[in-house]
Amino acid sequence: QVQLVESGGGLVQPGGSLRLTCAASGSTVSINAMGWYRQAPGKLRDLVASITDGGNTSYAEPVKGRFTISRDNAKNTMYLQMNSLEPEDTAIYLCHADGRTSWGAPWRYWGQGTQVTVSS
Image 1 (cartoon, one colour):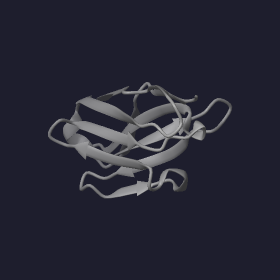
Image 2 (cartoon, helix red, strand yellow; image 1 turned 90 degrees about the vertical axis):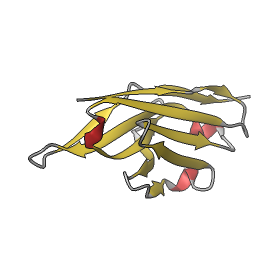
Image 3 (cartoon, one colour; image 1 turned 180 degrees about the vertical axis):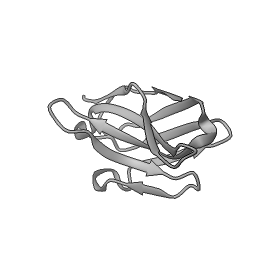
Image 4 (cartoon, helix red, strand yellow; image 1 turned 180 degrees about the horizontal axis):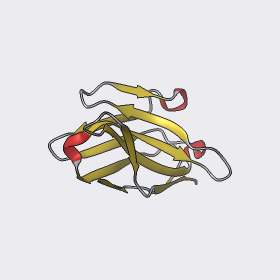
């Protein structure tokens, strides 16, 4: 089992910045990839960014050049630095962690989410 707790959300003006944190605990040695999704009211959950245990990253087009995903494996923590925020970035941001059981079955755990609101 892996527990994930997000923090760092809040209210920010357009053009501002926030840094989200996802702290993992439990069976963290089994974590491979991690990532961030977001869900706005009335919309589907969309992938924002992901990062492998080796540090390879990928981003959704709307956030490329503005968001940066990173992780500190020693601290079992992942981050999402969000710059040049836009009202369209308003959503609940959720982190996830992926891995496989000893017999190869994939699993994914989710955090509870943190609210990001971009508004003047």
